[in-house]
Length: 381
Image (cartoon, rainbow, N blue to C red; front, side, top):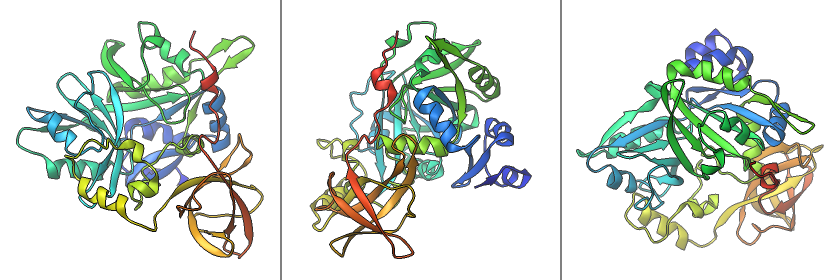
């Protein structure tokens, strides 16, 4: 990561929205795509996500529209989730596997009237695009929406109040994992209720030329809730990733980084009655393997040094290693994920993390969610 400059802007692939925001933030390289890591610091932005509203530039996410005579069959053959009965204006999350059963990405799938939209992570955007092109049949058309459209997200316990200013109907009528196609300033957009942090979350997909003005309009919004002045703050990827970890929301860069479906503990993205998809046979073999490991959450004292890759020990025996680590402002502790032997990958036990200096740090395994989002106790009015 580095402060934005001409070199970074020229080297990284990024939308016009990201370029405009990079003047005020720190850029991060996500497999060649520029994303904003932070604006005013991760902890400040985290506070917005958990207590107010965080505005998120999602323009680096991949957006591929699949259409044609065989579009449903084609997309279904690449997903672990069953989409045969996915209704129009509904969405779900699925794994996309390669032939060896390894995770290519965790994608969001949107059922349009005559097509399916696939949303990818920024890091795996090109990999998914290449995979779609490689598997494409004659009865399928693939359109890259990134050429013409930009995605913006906003999340927080009061995000629904901001969402109400966009849609011309009662916001509570849009259920979780649903979307509608509406007009915003006489331009067609996609309005989605779906998020990453456990808070109320929404995304909008707008034409490129509308992205910067829409961002500025959303950013200018504020409202009062009793004595609380609700504010909206731009949020970078660092704060978003902390909030995602707190509710055990998987990320392609962690769970999809060389781990099997079982190791990543993302079996809930798999429809087990479904058999006809790429990677199915390899996945069944993985599930039959012995001496398995999987991810479990843990907390540790924030004053002690730990790093990703540090060994995890139980009674002087190595039982795994740390794969993700962050500071949780709510818990005021280090929070992480460790890949552990199955016998140890349970909540409520005490383990040891061994840092590079050979020091022993107490790790306490915990069950998710590690933080209860404020949105869970706030009703839309």
